[in-house]
Length: 260
Length: 259
Image 1 (cartoon, one colour):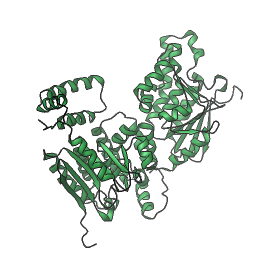
Image 2: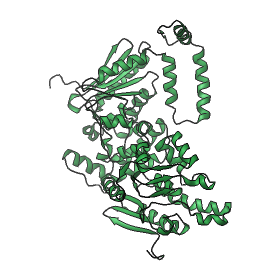
Image 3: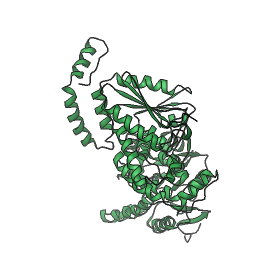
Image 4: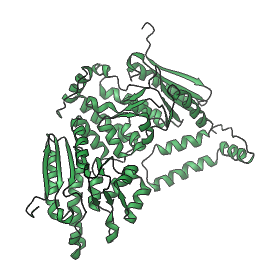
């Protein structure tokens, strides 16, 4: 693939948009070039009402090697802040958006690449995929939201071990720990992710958005949930989708949701 | 059915109260009749010092089908007023300092699953099914499920279960931690009463304070240490602690009084 190829490939399968990080020479490291294209592509997918689910994957058989270590040669605190800030923009879209995001992980999800995978709502991993919070190997602390996302999935004890020791977790172990949701044979993570994305795409999008929005406020106590659900449920009850769903329920048909 | 009488029943068996949702035509859905009775019975249970544990279950071989969909058309009681009522009932159960054990046969769907997970322990028949079915009708989970389910199964699995309205078999529910124990079909209530009896034999103040603390989740370590200091200080001054210590040294079972 030539250097002129876009750093993020965009492809639609029906109402599922696939965003493929495409920086194969650097194992899809999240260089400033990549972020400059990936961030807007993600924001556009999130804004597009015809996109009901987003799959994020990496080109060339690997997910992402993480941050761009070539930048670290003449790194300064101010430059470092800029690098991490650009990452925060798209992580914010991933976590606070309303479209369900499925990560399809083959090969390496290291460092910030691990962070991107864990920021997805649903994670499909190849059996031989490898996850590593490699930050500590170069004297950094985790970024990419891992301090928030990882303990939610694996618990605090495991998260501390993975983040402090930069230990490597393969797909099989990740599934056992609940770090990923679906295990796929090597080479078929994207297919499995697409199959799952179709299910998310067929579900009522406003309800999905409300659920995702609620989880973006995690952790919450029971009283906060009561407040969120009464506000959102009232709005959902009045939607055309809710009316369609009730019609379909009583007619024993599959509902067709429009996100309205 | 001539004797169709939807509602909820309360039975007291020693230190255990058994609260049963019962609406045979609606699979124990949370109709106004069921909710009204539950409100009344829950108030009774909470005010009764002799009751040390509660079993929450459903009649007619099922737990609860959830919100009363047919009642959604009845806008005499609009959602904005109806939901706080259900949430108020849920809060009374969840924040109750008496331990609650759910006994599930058949299935727990939508708001029925939410009610089941308000309990501290969930006992299920091994052929029961669970579904956060809200998204099937264009709604998001309510009655606290996003908090209670997520605390039990973690955020990844909770998103899958809630967003896809996935049908969850009892064996998967056990593996995920959504329920705590499986029984043979028809045995959930019997086993739940046994578990409730175990809770009822413990010191009610210690059980109640522990439950109250867990209901404050999420908490920081600093908060936890402050709260445990206050509550443990109270427990150190109780008769139950003296009884517990005496029973320990005398190698007998303690008889706690909640004092």
